[in-house]
Image 1 (cartoon, rainbow, N blue to C red):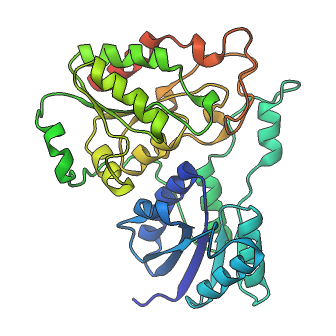
Image 2 (image 1 turned 120 degrees about the vertical axis):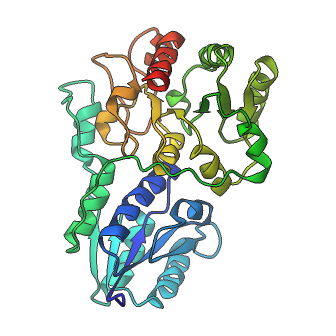
Image 3 (image 1 turned 45 degrees about the vertical axis):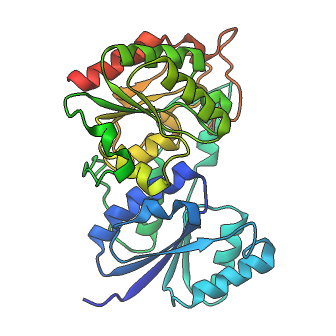
Length: 343
């Protein structure tokens, strides 16, 4: 059946948020197979959308071609060529609002995400905190498509389909008997990172138990940390800087488990159907950012009346002398990992 509708989907950043969009669009595509999707995001995130039927990826170049209001108008002109019937703004920032406003002048239907800012403020404030689970971000994304008139039910199930392992990583999977654990120990905001020394204890324990450990992450400093771990302990593999995003997703899809902060590592694992043991500090899964299909029982965190005090993890912990991350013992994380591996 030929497509009768075309939706332009806007979500430019951040990495984890874009990965969550991909999880939602997988379900949307399956449930609405005649609808064409034009996904607009940063070029670096294109790999998240591989294999989604009826999806075209259109890259935004916010630092060059599409910089400023004139650049965004150019992006609008580029997107006009798809002849969209609706705009799903899943970002609701200045850039996405500008692009959708250009389309509004042409009479195209536009719906925008409700980020629940007031609820999130109530969840994170220190006085009169309203501590309750908020609507999950993936459901907020889905609500936009529902508002546009489409049916969409999210299964919230992990769909595990191992991909072909990149050639240069195949030797890492040679021993089929060893459990394969990914660790994404870093995050954009330092307050979301479990103390490196204590993470080293977790890694030492897992290494001693004979698991194969794969370290994922970002920049040069993180790479140096991962190299030290790989040098100090057997069965530790530093993957930082050696693989592109598509290859990393393929590797993650062949793991038994991922260990991650409240960060993109969790959402990448969710996208390829791998369970995650996640570690939470000043942020909290109640804010709605738990990975798609992941279980709250796999969240490692402490109970404290000051938590959460941040939605994005860009504010320090308010739990007292010791931060909420420092209070979590390495053995607690190891126990949760073993519970998953042996369950």
